[in-house]
Image (cartoon, rainbow, N blue to C red; front, side, top):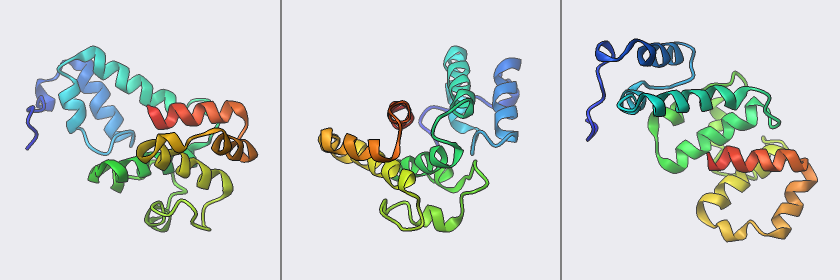
Length: 154
């Protein structure tokens, strides 16, 4: 049981309930519980939801890379519901099982570098040096590198 008690769905204001139930039904969220806690501050819930919706709109990395990064981040943070959910049809169980190895041959060069970026950002951010950014530039445009930073830090 969470330390902060989630607001029961039936007790939520209409807009908060709409965000949570609609987002869960659309597959944006693997579980409603964190959102039911965020709902104590309706502006925070709105901002979280807007950010989630914006993640897929006009992104330069593609849905598959964003989803691999989301799942790998969940693995690093040990969030079981987030690790288990799939929000992009291309993601297989093998893809997920191999996320621990960022050099897995099943991932394309962009996927490998994106995963390496996330792993280094979380474990050894000093390794994100000029040489590493040159390696990123071999497979990503500058705009994509900036978006990768936002995706991993957000």
